[in-house]
Length: 196
Image (cartoon, rainbow, N blue to C red; front, side, top):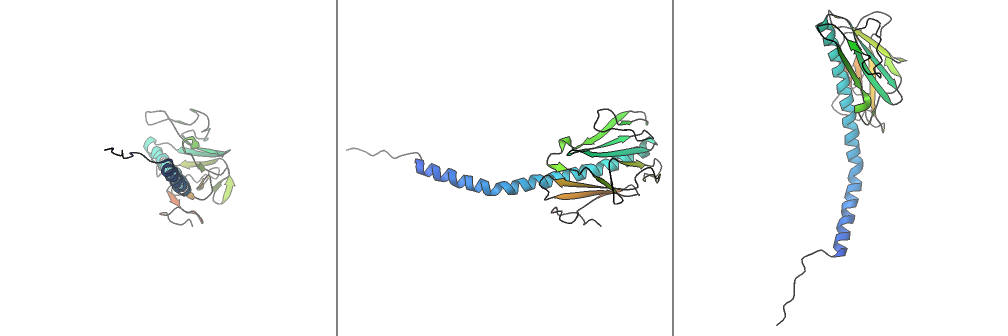
C-alpha cells in the first residue's frame, strides 16, 4: 500500500500574494513614518536651541562675563555659537572660532544644524519682527538678562521647519533672557503653546 507524502511548503502563488499584501501595507505606512521622523526632528532642533540659550545664560553668570550668542543661517544650514568676546566675533561655521574664556577654563561651545537632519532654519532670522542674519544676543553676567545695548538684538525668534514644510516650531528668547518654545500657526506639532 502506497502512502501519500504531505507537502510542507508554500506554493508560489501563496508567496506572491503575501509579498504583494506586505508591499501594499508598507506603502501605506511610509508617509506616516516620514511624518513622525520630520516632526521629531523639528522638536529636537527647537529643544536643543532652547537649551542652548539657557546654557548661554548660565555660562554668563558662572563665568561672571558677558556671553554673546551668535546665530547664523545660510544655505540650508545653521549654527549657534557662544563667545565671551565683547565684540561678538565668532563664526560658528569655522571650527574653534567661538571661544569661551574665563571661569578657569577655555572652551568652544557650538550647536550646528549638521547633526539635525530633516530640519531647516530659514536664512533670514528675526529679532523683534525685523529680519536679519546673524543675530547677536548678549547675556548680562549679573542677572542673566539680555544686554540692552542698541548694537545687540533685544530678542530672537528662531523658526525651525521640517524639510517638507509640514511641521514647525519657534524658539523665542525675550529680553528677560528666557527661551520658550511655541507653535506658530499651521505648526502641526501638538503639545506647545501657540506663539503670540
